[in-house]
Amino acid sequence: MAAVKMDEHQHNPQQTPPPQYYYEEDTISLSDILLILAKQLKLLIVTPLVLGFLTALYVLFISQPVYVSSAKIMSSGGSGSTSQLQGLAAQFGVTVPGGSDGAQWVYPEIVKSRTLAKSVLKRKFDTEKYGPQKSLLQILTYGDEEPTVSIDTLEIHGANALIGMIEIESQGSFYNLSVSTFEPQFAADLCAVLIEELDRHQREYKTEKVKETRLFIEGRIIDVQKELEEAEEALKDFVNRNRQIQGSPALLLEQQRLTREATVLTGVFTTLKQQLEMTKIEEVKESALVQVLDPPEAPLYRDKPKRKLSVLLSLILGFG
Image (cartoon, rainbow, N blue to C red):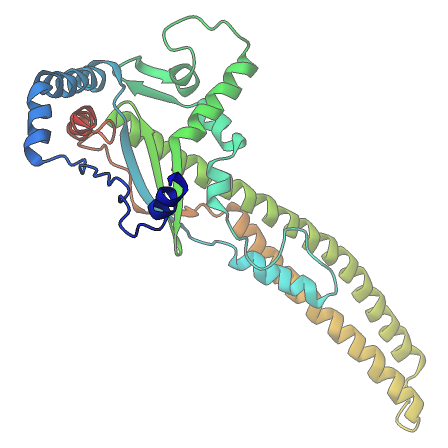
């Protein structure tokens, strides 16, 4: 009987369904967000104000203002005569020391070189912070204090500091030179001195190359003059030995050869003398090789720090 009941229970089509579980959706409404903000209202107000106050103290009293003075410059070339002399030497089969047609001035590398920086460090400037006629080396290194390291170490630190203050960008055939310092007039004076030193560096380079060209031409003049004198002597001896050459084709050909050689050497000698005079003029000629299109001026406003923007960003960051 028990077996029959068990069998009926197993074949019962109406079985109890499994339990159903329902999950409540986890949502946050706008009212919940406003409630949370209301509870943290003091934190939302105090944090941005504190951060903004600290930022204002830093930009007003701690950070050093930075003023930028800019100038636009370009190279005037000045290598035309040198190029002509080098072309003349090339016709003689000799390469003149001094490079190719026209020096390609790489101003960014020259302006940011330690050589130019060390020459600028010796110049003196007037500043409100350190007083009148203080060397740039003193301004950038030990200031009003006594130096505690050697002059070589000071020059290394001073040159690195000066190079970090300079920015130069190429704009086609022009260059935009910018200098950043702690005073507006000091920035303009330093930018002007950099242009002067750059012009002096380029002039010395050009003078050295023209001098090398002049020495080459003077050496060639001595050699060509000697060859010309020998050619003229050979022609004179030939004419003295051969008074009647009209009936001898060989003697006529020899005379033409000697005459041609003397004529060519005469032309070379004359050209060299002319170019030597041009080189001497080029060597003593004084002209600005760095053309200043926009001279440096003292900026009216500081470039850094941007106080309003810094405080505004600190408030936004504090609120975030």
